Structures are given as structure tokens and as C-alpha cells.
Image (cartoon, rainbow, N blue to C red; front, side, top):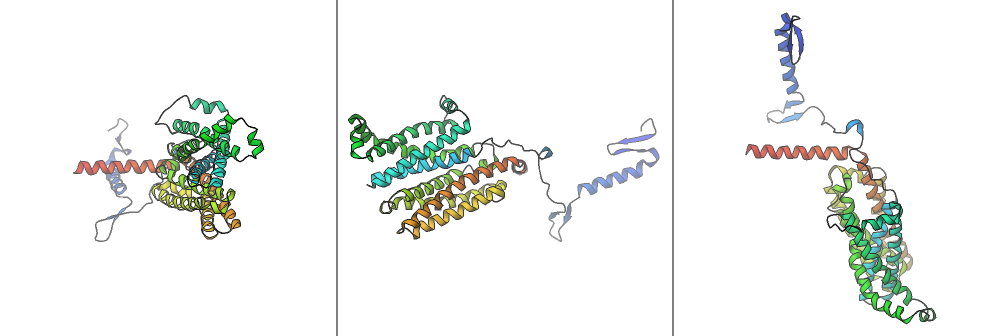
Length: 370
């Protein structure tokens, strides 16, 4: 009892003469609150929620994780890097099978593509020295560190192989004007450099997917297990499409097979990725990223169909090659935009965290009960 003639309780204050009645009311309110939203199902003993499930969000709806500061340079870097790596792989196979024109054009395409990729990366970094600074550390557990060293190994090998092809394609007079040591050295180094570029090019085409998956961005992180397969298929379809544009039809059979196989692998891996991503898979279907990825699937499928049906027609082959390149680029840009969208919306961070916490509690309760 308080000195002011009132009784105190955890539910409030009431006058002394009204304490029993108000206490009963408070107890009734507690019982009703404990059973709110629950009703017995007829004869089954189950329970059905009568209120909607709570939607978890962050304070004032602000992002929980910070979206990456990357701009359009980065998805362009992802696309051109994948194109370069897969082109080197295609060039090595073409040389080993005696398709000289396909090998030459693919090696030159790889050099141009990796040059463009390096430009986009350095433009995003702001200064070339920042890329060189990344080479000061060799850390196998860091995708950024390993990616820098992969590029460092791939670039010179791809450049040497492409330079040898360019020199070999010069007119005899211009080629004879070069020192014999240079031409002989390029001829001897062309095949080993091309094979090294093919081996490291496979990593160049896929390491960027590992890099994205290692971030805290929800859509990229949840897709980390399947994203390298999506990028590998996308790179293969783009390299095959570019080779169909630049190489004679009678030598382009490996390029056609790579293009069709790449589209099939990309679409299969993308379907697998969507099913395993959880809530953040919505970002692949909504807004600008969804539009890009739907267009990517359509253009890639059209390119693959044209490759199969129009292999005897040069115009159809060229149109199919353009479609394959566009589809591959849209895949990279769409996945990039999906990740940015997932970082800006807090529910893609908070809701999966809450689900993991609840799942952990259920496991602990079941373990304690057993």
C-alpha cells in the first residue's frame, strides 16, 4: 500500500477500495493477451495464427549493410574479364585442333577484352597504383588478393600470345623488317603463353563471382555457391559468340559448341541459384535487375537457337553472336544491380537473420527436449 492511499502493481496504480476488482481485470487482460491470435482448429488440436506474421525491418527503414560504391565500371569489368578468359580457353583448343584463324582471332579478342577490363577496373579504383598496391600482399584466403595475382599472371600471357599472332599475320615485308630474334622468340613463346593464358583465363572468368559472394551484400552472398557457375556459362557464351563474329564459318564449330553449351550451363546454374537464394531471390525478378535478367535469358536463348539452326548461314551466325554477347553482358549487369538493390532494402538482411536465429532456437529446444 502506498502512503497516498493507493496500491502499486506492475500493471499500474489503483485506489485501495478498488484493488480486488481491478486486479481481476488485469489478470483477465493478461490471459487474453497470452492467447491472442490463437484459436483451436476444429477437433485437431492445432493452432492457427489470427494475426499476420510480423515484418522485420531496421530502424527507420535504413539499410543495415552499406551498398557498394561501385558504378557501371564494375559490371563492365565483370563482363569483359569473363569474355577474355573464355576466349583464351577457346583459342588454346583451336590451336591444338589446327584451326589457326579461330586461334588467332580468339587470342586477339582476349587481349582486347582484358585491356578493356583492366581499364574499367583502374577507372573505378581511380589510380593505377591502387591495383599495384594489391600485389604487395599474397593472401590465399582473400578473393581480392588472389584475383589480383590471377590477373597479373593472365595479362602478360594473353598479351604475348596475341602479339605473336599479330606479328604472324603481318605482311611478309613488315614481318621481315623485325629483328629475327624477336620473331623467333615470339614464335617459340606463343604456344606456352597461350596455354598459360587458357589455364589462368578459366580463373579470370569466374573469380569475380567468388569476389562478389564474399561480400555482405545479401543477394551476392546468398548466391555465392552457384554464382561462379553462372559466370562461367555466361563467359563461355560470350566468347563463343564473339568468335562466331570474327572467325570463318568453317572453323567456328568449337565456338558454336562453346556458345550453346555456355547458354545451357548459365540457364541451369541460374535456375539452381534462384531456388537456393531465399528471400533475396526476389531482387532477381523485380525492378531494373529483373528486367535485365529476363532480357538476358531471352537474348541468350535466341542466340543459342540461332547458333544451332543457322550454322550454315553467315548472317544468322553473326546475328546470333551479337545476341550472345548482349545476353552475357545483361547477365552481369543484372546480377550486379540485384545485389545493390538487396543492400538498399533492409528486409533482405534482417529477415534471413531472424530466420536463422529462430532455426537455431528450435534446434536447441529440440536438443534440450531429447
